[in-house]
Length: 242
Image (tube, rainbow, N blue to C red; front, side, top):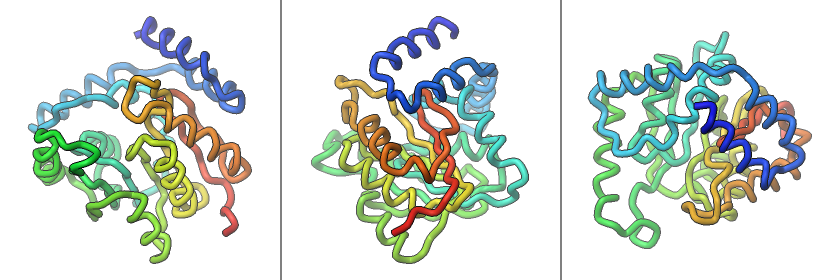
């Protein structure tokens, strides 16, 4: 675990955004409980979830304490997740914060141009079977692209306390997601952006990092940085004029 963390730190430092450097250092030096990964994996087995991937589980020791601290004193949390795939992150959220989340999900699940492989046709039904085993207060599913769905939410006046962004990884789409999510997030709310350190060889290349860096550069007066690792977490401290 320590070797993996050091490798991640060295890779991250090579392209470090100077504004995030002290927050990255603080995140990396905080104590972590690796046993939470095993505890969630056991929960997945017990519940009989159907997951083919466990991409984000390595983030659990970093994100779990932050989310517990955020949720302290909140009986009800309006939660928006962009990019749900099979629902593994939703299962983690339900495990971490049971019976406290009113959930909205945005995902197209299948697109002939973006992911034409036949295997992706099975993802949405698997998502449905998985979420049927979860215990959210409510679950609202928006099937579509976030770049189309988020403007509708803003027009309706929707608001959220917690937003998790893991949709398209192109710089343009992530910028659109962040612009609208920043407006949809209530003051005091938390926005978590996944896959910040994606490299050229990975899906979408470095688009997430490019978009997050520019979003924070333009709107940093409205957000405090909570954590920087594979994910970046921003807490909203003031309303964005528009």
